Image 1: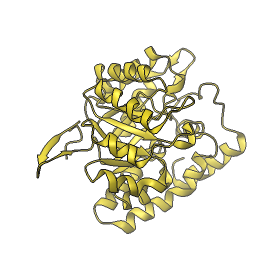
Image 2: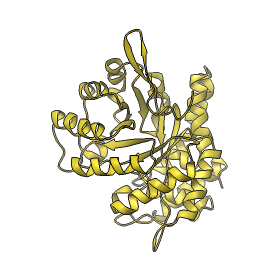
Image 3: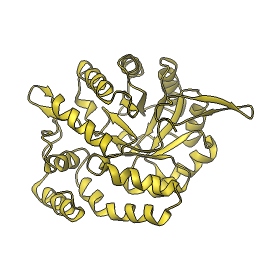
Image 4: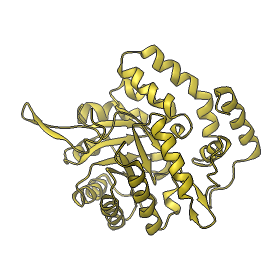
Length: 308
């Protein structure tokens, strides 16, 4: 499959079928900062590390990329840099979500203009909305762009769940092609309602295999920042019929995942990337440095995994 079939809709048996942006692992890449802004030299190194490591797509300016601390000009500049650096070797997906529909539209149109292959858009947080409001919000964004759109359902951060029936209604919009789903309990319902041509991606690294077993197409991953090859291989082994190998990899990652989520993401993953020798700096406030006991746990698990 061509990884950059951005939205290949084909007529099959009277039904339009959508190809996913990717099958496998998309790394939700961190953003390296220094005192004057983004460290683009290190960002380029991280992008090359992901591509060489087997990631099937790169998500920029997501939660892990600290997009919520980026002014719009910086946000779009990072997307543009990533798109140009990747140069269509894998899809670049841009986080462009907002709890203000107009703002989300502006960011999404700008991301398309600078070369993003698709966008990821989160459910509105803080002000929240109804299921009807969710449909209207995401439809307005999708209608404003031509590139594919992935919905992002993460109730633990937004205090708002997008119901399976709402996802089904949105899946009928041509360029809404997938959901990053963090509510594991409804994955099966989403797959049943939306059909096989609508991709469901795990939003949790510790639930990749459960989501795949219910019909998922892969993961948008935090841990892929440090283990891109294993994250990719876990998904591919499953699809190649090596279930035992896929399970073995999922089990191998669990202690590492616990350390990577000992504090709110992306505090631990940024510390982990620093431990691997990339100079990515610290998280922006209000996020703080990883506590010393959690840093020691992370260091131990990374040593056990063979990363440092």
